[in-house]
Length: 416
Image (cartoon, rainbow, N blue to C red):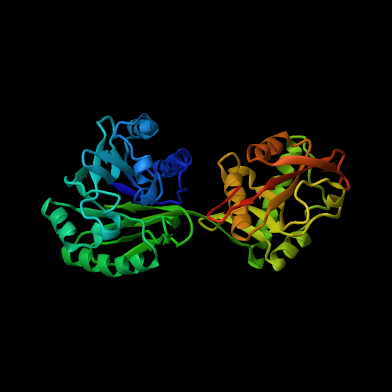
């Protein structure tokens, strides 16, 4: 059988957005023929004890129906992290969907002292049987307690999966503990961790698989979403991870080809947004040398890119921007390889750009979009970018809309 371990970045108080992200990741697992997909601790709400009571749910809530449908239609078992209501309080739970079966839930049995003001302990252990393999589940703190593993071992667990939300210190403990346990009991251990801010700490990913000899087979990085696919028969692990990083000069040739392919795709649609003189390979090389071009990669294949800087075209001086005399971030040359369009990758690059703006105290973002590229203009408008004026660039027949989005900064939070 194949087990998909998901590494996710969830957002506080944005349950529906997190659900959609989960569904996309499950689809990746399904494409890799996964029989089981497991997510990190409290992945649907993000690990936020202060908000657990507000977002605690019933097991049969209809908002989770899409997970059951995916399970039924693809013969895959799915485990997502949610706070659930119990008779004596709130549980930290994993809601489990099995093909054409009633939903079941596993609730964390051993809580850290910091969690006691918000949650109560679960009571019933769970061992899933999938294709003849017994799979035990543990959630974060309890997975580092030897007693919890021993109980799973007594119930005949062939594989142990830890669903966690851990910062750097917690991951260091896990990387010491899990190899010893897996080697002692000849049991593979898989760990699903999240990335990004959780409660009052930064979760650092590094989701991993250790084989029955305690050997680390594969791990994900500390910053990006991704999946590990573990084959229980061959003990091989495949990685599917998308990441955004600063482009390097060694990327230039392949990256420029993506821009050429993007230009040709636009022209095939009758949109003459780019010309033979823009963007050129020298422009892209200059972006790379300045360190302002960020590349979206999936398993080291270039999917797209975006220029993020403070450089504004001279034509922008003619525009009546709403946010003047402020720290402004500007976006240029967003491109997605035509083979990977309509898969949400442009959204990922824009999410990255807006997060960059928030984290670096920019008050607004500016960009321009060709007036004949209606799909792109609609894309930006849905993200709350507003047209402030129009400009003309050389060799283009039609105008470009200059668009702007405010980044609001408060004492406690940053958002746009």
